[in-house]
Image (cartoon, rainbow, N blue to C red; front, side, top):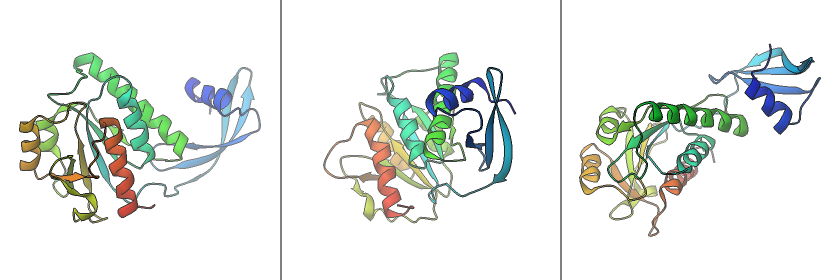
Length: 226
């Protein structure tokens, strides 16, 4: 098979591979295929070999409900969340979010974040690509949370320590992270009403781009495969 231009560029310019070199391809759904590169003129082809389905996913099923962050912070959040094993990312439009997206611009940004998730999988060795869902409002996200999920919202004031939140490894986790300016009081009240338990990682206030990945790393220590 001929490699798509973006993949061929990564193979040649980043990995510095060429004719005869071996690599592993993945289909994004858990499958991996051993392959050998074959040059055909200016193009690179992959001669496909044996397919396997090694388990590379975290035992935790974490959905990150992330309020939109400005600049390239959302890119960083998606990338690091994928590296830490997130199952899916749900971007949220909240009242105090600096970044406002709608229409075609929101769709393009969502597609951009999905490609970042693919690239992060290539880097960290995951063979299942987490889904980046379309941007929704906070009330829509709260209404769509999986019924069986343990619901956590990171909150610096009044939250219980994460290790005391009564978590179980077999239970899906929905993790809600606020924007740069924090949650509006009504939004936090709505989250509480929706069954979200406020948790804290200590007395320090974390930035929105730090908060989610910090909680995910802590969850992997407490319940995951660290």
